[in-house]
Length: 109
Image (cartoon, rainbow, N blue to C red):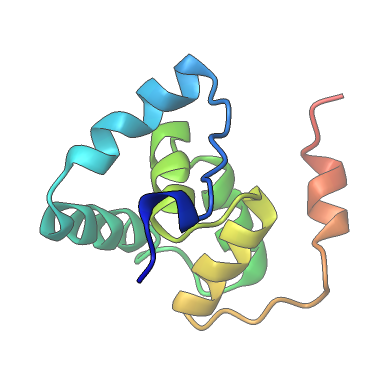
């Protein structure tokens, strides 16, 4: 029989307070509401012409709050991975491993 002392210790990760506050409200949403919001955010791309270029331009206009929510909901950490997931959802073919041409053109230097 395992005792409390036999359980492995959990490592607590330091979380920046602003990160915690940003995700706290999302965690408290009921699961149904989170699914509904995910669908509504993905549906935002519905009338976008079905090309990689058009989706990338639309993705650039995605409000930060919605992008953060989708990354949290789908457990994605990078914007590029979120873009690929959205394209896959809408059956948009991505021409390269990374969209270097568009990323370079739209980079904030």
